[in-house]
Length: 622
Image 1 (tube, rainbow, N blue to C red):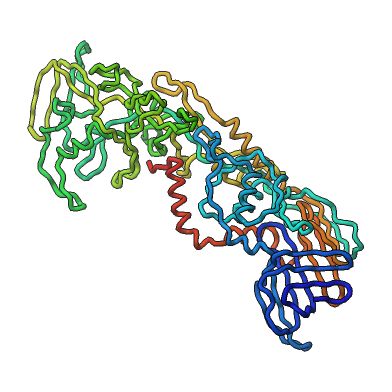
Image 2 (tube, one colour):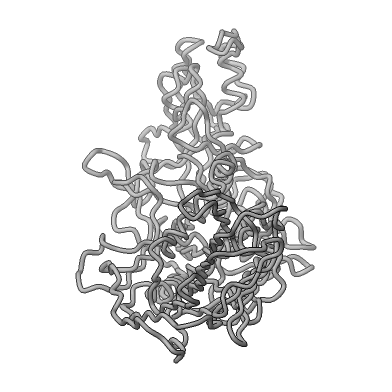
């Protein structure tokens, strides 16, 4: 309906308006308008266009929605307060599903699922039900990892823009949407105005911007030690098992005559697959099942291994007596418990169709097997147990060589299991046993004796920090403040940036040469940091109240526009570099509201997603 000669506003189904005010805002939260109307017969439309006119100017807020209606009774009679939201109210109910910019272990992007930020923004606008939008101002070099599974499209659009120093604004002149760079835009227009004010808007600037990457992955060989399961179902080295021979010595041919003991602990007798000399009497376990010592040996001995640094080349002991091992780029050697194993490598292989696949981790060593050109003899040290490139037509690696699991009893270690029993043969002159079950048995022989295989496990693992016990991540710092406190930093975690350290060669069993992708990691971190630095620039602010209604499109500089019609006349308030409305939550508060939306419905999914991401990153509790 018409309202005075100096300004009109209409909405479908509303016949008599006393006053109207609408504050347009940037971001993905809906803008709010309020209209005071006189009582009338009939209900207004729930959805419709708000149309404001002034002289020859028309400003349209399309697809507005009535949010609430309140009745007031005052000295002038009854008035109805109607609260409107612009079309962004629908965005909260829009979701998107898709997996894009998957980081391969070498930190490259899987080309089959690569999407630029502008392409991602296009997908998000389409998921929001919008058909007219401009995303060209969004920086297009980044490749953010997007794992959307029925995820809020508005929240993801808000996050994508904010991470790259941008925001979403409505363009009322064309009834479209536009992504703009925060801080970039036009000056306020030169319309007839009053109450013009200028100022500066200093930002609360930390000393640094910190970009934190995904956990660093280190790929190298780790020495293994044969273990077996104890009668209480814990894991122990073979010689420490309660049912191992009490003493065990082997005199090797052509040696100096000094007896040698092996980690196999005397289990390498001729029946080392069946262990018939062990007790077969079954006993009761805490879970109600029964098992015998012989069964434990058959299931685990020479089939089960774990990382072991004791006696490994280059291993030392720290001040607490723990065996530690050097890992490239880490200042101090690490303990076994710091290592988070995975079943993958950092490299990829390509099949005949050009598809990329992640290479599996593998085990190498000196062992008895058919891999040595078909000879039934010990393979030389460094031989893979899975016959690399077994499928010659595709180059694919055989994956069924081992399994990596967490034992419920031995929860501080990862157990590596292999299907064949891995041993190596020696030709001794004398073998001396003192058996637990059969009493004292002494035998002299020159036949073959079996001992544990000498194995190493190559995988891309993570390392826990010894103080925080969290995986080590790469941290990039860019100073933006005047101070030097590196802990006073605006911190952003970017799990799509994945640093890797790959050992290329070894000398005397120790890493001697390695490569990293840190150069690319630094470039990616710097790109994000420079985009975020715009948030902390001190900007000049300007606010003006224009006499009448004027269509003013927002951009990265003009942050807020308010249209008002009342008995005093029509006015337009616009702000550059700041927001003038004290009633409307500011931009950062609106972003927090966006992040909180729908959080209760996502709790269960977040738990699942966290577990899935941990598994994907190889976060097996060691």
